[in-house]
Image 1 (tube, rainbow, N blue to C red):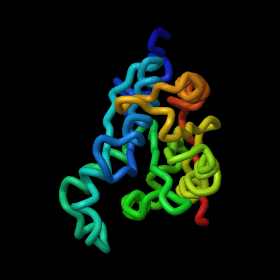
Image 2 (image 1 turned 180 degrees about the vertical axis):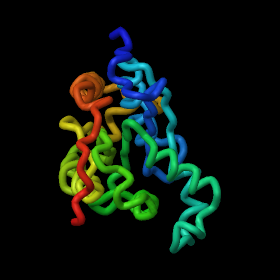
Image 3 (image 1 turned 90 degrees about the vertical axis):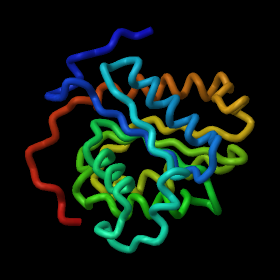
Image 4 (image 1 turned 30 degrees about the vertical axis):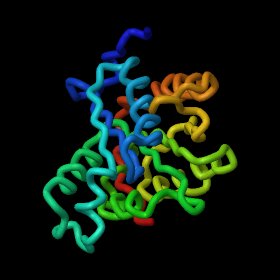
Length: 198
């Protein structure tokens, strides 16, 4: 196991890793994947990990049109997302994109709250034919927030899971590669410039 790297923590006592699963079901392969990614990074830095599941938040979220109308549990989750040092986000692929409630949750995130925040992207689907969802759907969404999407995204198909855990050796290797490639981007001090207006 790699020793934690305290130097990456910046001014925080511990790095705050928030993993968001866009799955509406439990158990969920998407939740298993984002949790595995968050744990892989946490094995390399001194970090606390929190996993947020749309299976919990979705019933409290769907009817809200304004942030002020959200249930306290959803507001608290949004504050955690906006304060994260690293986001790990994943969604099942549903009709060629991320789930609607996943997008609805991020519609309430402050437009400039994620500027320069590192984001590790993940997705799951019924087959490997959906793998480019990471590049064509998730990466543009977080580019809008001016977040720092990390180089290696991780996609896993249904066949890559067994008993609710990632079992495919190639996906497990990619999880480790994604965590390794994330390290140079963690704990950096954001540039002292205001976010671009658009």
